[in-house]
Image (tube, one colour):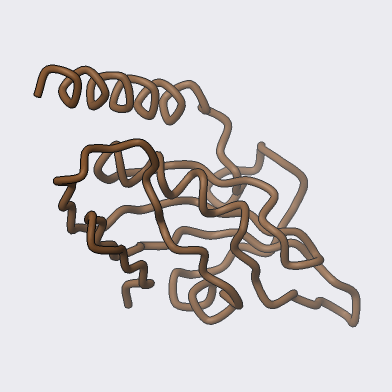
Length: 141
């Protein structure tokens, strides 16, 4: 029990610190400053562009793990559809940590503007179930 609590505290503090230290957003949709321009997508638009979802899989946790919930992440993908940046917005720290490991393996359908490939970005809401019996990861409408 003490070992599980210590592991939780380490994971929580690490995920919280990473999410808080990354003050530069992946997308520049809310302001004129930020990374190079990308096409800003609404949640329904970015959901429609997802080609491959890598399931969330927390590693090294207690066998009695059973988490269910939603989390919000900001994702920027390149003209090739590969994730260039992911930032935790809100959710359970353990699930956010698992998401930050899984999101770089996600792929998106490329965007085009005037016939040339363009990067895209937006926010996704992810529903998850993490347990010792397996996990499920789905996009929330």
